[in-house]
Every structure is written in structure tokens, then in C-alpha cells.
Length: 394
Ligand code: BEZ
Image (cartoon, rainbow, N blue to C red; front, side, top):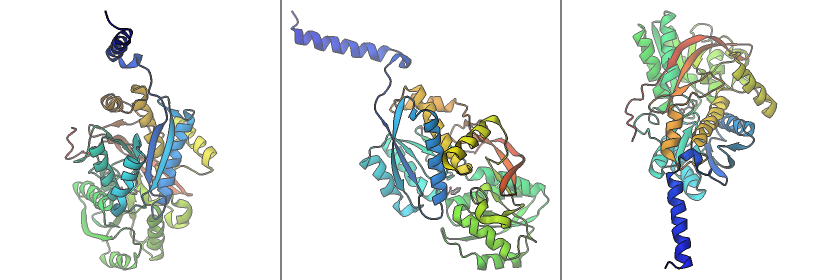
């Protein structure tokens, strides 16, 4: 005869077995707050970018009534200062000290590499809302690592094609010397040289230095047909102003990925007027989705949104898609990943899907600065997918 205690234990075990046999959708949703670790720059050259990403993320969560996948969100924030030397310590504050469920970050390509490594080792889900480093969706790719932004190659390659089609033959490139700058120049060179152009000189300076004068003098003496540049945030403001002050804007067209003029136009003023850039977002898309997003963003923050805000917003959307499929359980990695891999993400930039390496496949727009807006000119490259070199999903 079983004792009442044994009877109760057997019943509990039977319930557990029955639960495990139920389809996922019939199981109880995960409970409690979901801990989101935001690792972003809140100081230094990219501070404004970090803030815009967080604003966008929080806006999407607020639109869902403060819950994503049925879970309330608890935020943990670390200022990574865009400093690769501090990246491992910073990401471990979120993973080990705060025990976050999901990591969202970051902006700087040199910092994100440490985040991807830590995410791989710990199994923590990582959504990258900016940094375009090829390593993230290349050799370091993984089933728990996703990007809501772009690869450094994407807007750069598109701009290389645009510059070649304009008939430019000799270009000089100038950038900060780190992964983002190098990969951006690489993408531009590929598109430009395929179209018959030649990059005659690659100039650079260490991040985050902004002493451009000697390099601008060199550009003037090289007299190229065009200059391609990767700078963002506060560095982009200074570069555009210095380029104009050196008298180069009048004589040598300046091109770049749209980071050169996104979120910077108030500070750049007339010196940015007329600049052509390529990016996965533009002002004046004038779609119902983007118009609604922009209205909501302005209402919430009394600021115009930029590409960084869109990427933060979409990082939260992606989290929502994964959690909806797992009833709020971030631990169900395979289901979370499968949901995102087949999703069409309804972004303000235009709907996008994820490639096999979890990078957005998206339209790249050609934009021109006019009256402090990055006005849409045309689609420079339709549904452009990063090659995802070196990614093997394990
Ligand atoms: C990067 O480091 O990947 C990056 C930083 C700012 C804007 C775009 C890319």
C-alpha cells in the first residue's frame, strides 16, 4: 500500500510528465520580471547614440504596456564608454553581478566583440542594436546572438556602388582606425572598385581622436575625385565642420555611410547641406509605420528620432517576437531563435528579415541632407544581405 506521502510524490511526478508532454503553447507563461542589461555608451563620442538606442527600446516596451512576451521589464544599465579595454569587465557586471536574462548592446565595434564572446560562453541572449562588426554575424555568430542594426559592410558597399555610378575614378578614404572604420572602408572599396573606381589612399587616426587638420591637408594635396569617410556621433560633427572649413566641401564630394549625418544635423548646420550618404533609414520615408513611430518618439522624448532610435526600437521588437513564441521564457533558446529566423520584423525603416547569420537583410537608402534632414533620394540597394563570412551556426 503506498503511503499518503508517496502518493502525493507520484502525483506530482505525473503532473510534471504530463506538462512536459503538452505543446509549448499550452504551458504556463514564464513569470516574474525579465532582466534586460543595456550595455551602451552614455559618455564620450557615442553618448548620444547610446541614449537614442535606449529611448527607442523603451518606447517599444511602453507601447506594449510595459511588458514584452507577457513579462515586465527590469532594466540594468552599464556605460561602456566605447572603451574596448573595459568591455569584458563591463559585460560581466551584467551577466555575473546582475544575472540579466538578455543583453542589449552596444554601439562600438571594438566593444561588441567582447560582448559576443561573453554571450557565447554564458549562453545569454544578445541583441546588438548598432555595432556593425563583421565578427558578430561572422566567426562569432551563434544561435543566441542577433543584430537589429546593420553590418559595417552593408551601407559602405552600397555607397561604393553609388560613387562608381557617379563616374568617380579616384577616391581617398578617411576613418577612425578600428574594426568599424576598417570594415566600412573595405565595403566601400569593394563596391567602388567593382564599378571601375580605385581607392588611391586610406587615411586614418586612432579612435576617438578628432585632430583632422593634417589629414585634410593631405587630402587637398592628393586631389581625389571623391572622399569616403566613416565617422559617427561627436566625431562626425567635427569632421563635417572641419571638412567644410578646410575649403574641401566646394571642391571634393564627400560621401559616407549615413552615420556621418544621422543625429548630427543640428550641430553640423549648413556644413552638412547637400551631403549624400547611404543607410538603412532615412527621413521622409512617409510610410504609415514610420510616421507612427516618429510621432510617438517625438511625443515621448521631444526629439526627432534617428537611425539609432530605430535600431533600439527594433531590438525590443525582436525580443518581443522571441518571447511571444516562448511564452516569455528566454531559456527556450531553440524556439526563441526559430521565431526570429522566420520573422518579418515590422521596422520603421521598412520590414526586414534576418539572414542565416542573424543580420538584417534590408534596403539601403541613398539620402541627401536638405534643411537639416536626411531626405530619401532612392533605394541604393534592395534587400542587401551581408555575406556573413565565417559564420557557422552551432
Ligand atoms: C561601430 O563601431 O560599429 C559603429 C559606431 C557608430 C556608428 C556606426 C557603427
